[in-house]
Amino acid sequence: MQTLNVDLGERSYPIHIGPGLLEQPERLRAAIPGNSAVVVTNETVAPLYRDRLDAALEGLQVATVTLGDGERFKTMETVGRILDVLVEGRFDRRTTVIALGGGVVGDIAGFAAAIYQRGVHFIQVPTTLLAQVDSSVGGKTGVNHPGGKNLIGAFHQPRCVIADTDTLDTLDDRQLSAGLAEVIKYGLILDLGFLDWLEANMAGLRGRDAALLTEAIERSCRIKADVVARDERETGMRALLNLGHTFGHAIETATGYGTWLHGEAIGAGMCMAADLSHRQGWIHHADFERVERVMRAAGLPTEAPETLTAERFFELMQIDKKVVDGRLRLVLLERLGHAVVTRDFDPALLDQTLQAYCGPR
Image (cartoon, rainbow, N blue to C red; front, side, top):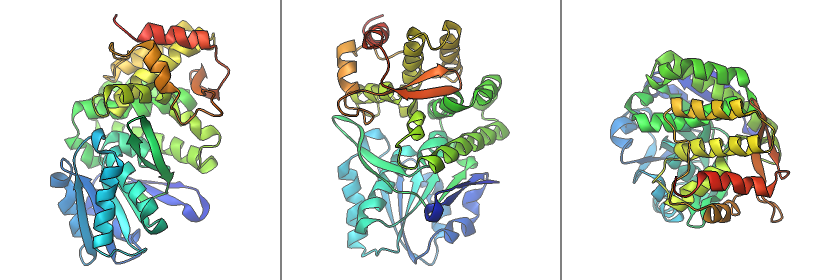
């Protein structure tokens, strides 16, 4: 087992990574300060892992909320279901909300924990690769709005993250590839050596080599923990973690949440960001081709959906949370392994990128 620490002063917390962690109830119990807990999971994960969590929670007042599986359930209505259980069960401010599932479950449960009685304790038990390397770490919680992705939310740090790598055994290939998108992101924005390692080991990662997956998770979490420690509220460098997300969120919103998995949309979005970076003259064409190649090797899409026009794509990008004072900011690559958040891109070149990726091909 590896344990990393997210250093946020009094809000610091550990990330435990390794096999069999759901069989070690003491790690979970150590992070629960009160005598009650509400487990939030979904209909896919619950039959697989809820019994192990229940055993760890024996002796506590426990309620379980089982959600539908998918991005389309990431709504205020779903948050309301969790709040109803908390209120009806008379759970107090010392209760702990436990998210057992992927990124959607973690975001919804974390947001409910953030707003119930102005904030109760929260634990992340991520069961997908994407959640283990990204969404479970850093305290971003929230839900979607029909007008845009993750527009309603709050920062609410967990008390700990328990990433049991054995749960990846039940993950389907499409979900595994979606998680690899966020892993690749870390190499592109901050660690060229990690990108080299990923390219060399992609076949083993997709083949579910346990040692390789554990190393990829640990290295990804180490990078994210360092970024979050420096910029918890995304006022500066943390925005680098959104490489491809402005493009990807537009794809998710346009196609209906859940048609494309989040990681799939981000994979295509990172290709678009690399394309614009190349058009800006910041990266070489060979670098752009390398970005596309690693996405394909991970089993990810490299193009936007044909039904999405450039005009509609740009309209959706304007709703992004990185828009400040009406001006769109993008995360682009000055070089592989080094990203920047910038307004200084040529709008005509952005239009060229959108025209190249959108519409019939």
